[in-house]
Length: 177
Figure 1 (tube, one colour):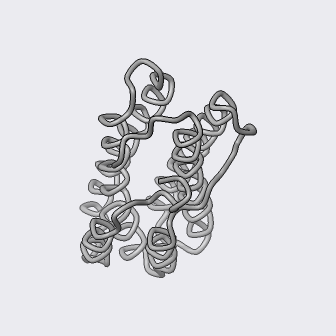
Figure 2 (cartoon, helix red, strand yellow; figure 1 turned 60 degrees about the vertical axis):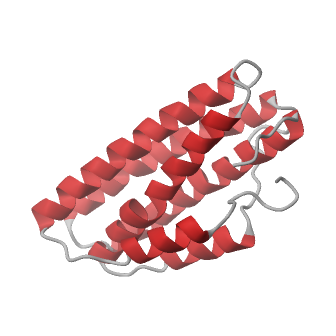
């Protein structure tokens, strides 16, 4: 990730991170009623709450970065297309694979890159929030792995999406990069 030096560029990045958190929340909420396995519904429900907390913390941070509270900025077209593809998964196995094996590993890497590349003093509040999100996403992946083993779910599109995710050079929209 390019080092974001201006407050405006950091606000755009945080707004994009918020967009993704809202997308995660809305997608898992949309999937929950049509997922037959109760264990998956329970996990999705816990994770919906996590994503809401992430979106709220990021939204409050955008205000501190001189944008309106809960400022949200759509990611790049390539990243948005990737999210759309992941969100179209139908079976429980495909949904869990697409989200926890396809999207979340890339998010963890991108957020970790942001932490490594931003100013440790000037952007410390964002670092605290994003570091917490990274830990939460890693925990969610571990919970999903446990659930896949319990439910004996078949492999889904996650590895394909993860490969495509790595090819997206930036999740930030051009104006923000």
